[in-house]
Length: 159
Image (cartoon, rainbow, N blue to C red):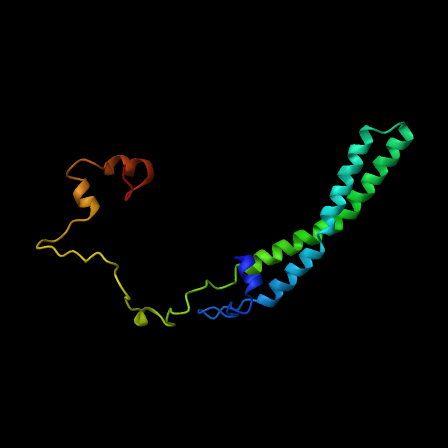
């Protein structure tokens, strides 16, 4: 959904049908900031390279130098990582406010405006008797066990 929203931010309505507002421009802005914070991953990559060099250090002084360099890189990464996590959390909160997208042909309105556009190719069956639901059919055939279900989870559940 995020990828679609970033590529089509103009197509997403800023206010949902229920009147709740969402801040699409802010989501786009935060995603741009997140791209700029990719250097935190670069710090991590460099620190891993330095860690690999520690094993092949010629002497203790060189080993200590690599350890200090790796520590410095990881410390530089920390604030970037924290900001990245803050952005992730804010984007997640904002995405929760984005309204569901409907097809453009779907009419606005509530239940009173609902209309059936089609039922597919299968005709609606008609019966000369009152059809039974699945429970009414299963119980006389001993296909469900209401008593055991009620003992385990409470009434309304069956095995």
